[in-house]
Length: 156
Image (cartoon, rainbow, N blue to C red; front, side):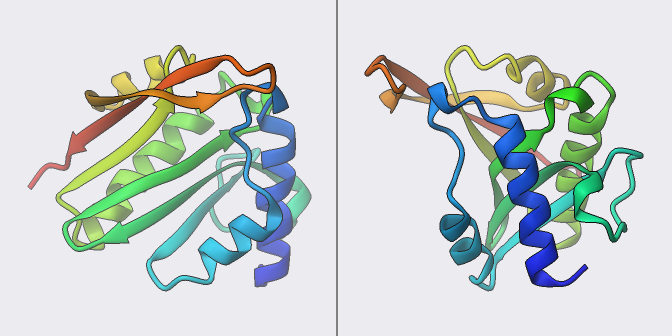
């Protein structure tokens, strides 16, 4: 899949997955700019759990991540609503951790808004809360929410 098709697939998932109320989705320009950086990568999976697919419209979920020496940060994870509860999120997180380790990471991180239902998934995959940013997120109606930072140490 070429870079434009990959970006189309990411944005298709993003638009379906994120409720505008939470203001978590990124714009196409933000995603494209991030992917232009040398240590930022994406992982895409289709509705059948395949990472190597060619049709952007079959994308079910993605991860956007950034690497620095010894660690990797999960910037975004999204799964289309009609593909949730089918193991896609688990598959993405496992691939993220495995590939991060292969790329030299010893630890991986993610941040989520307090109360995000995905917390159960993160914890089930070995992520533990390590910090909190008070009033970090702001919803469309002005409500503020804390950000919770999670980490996972990768096995040696």
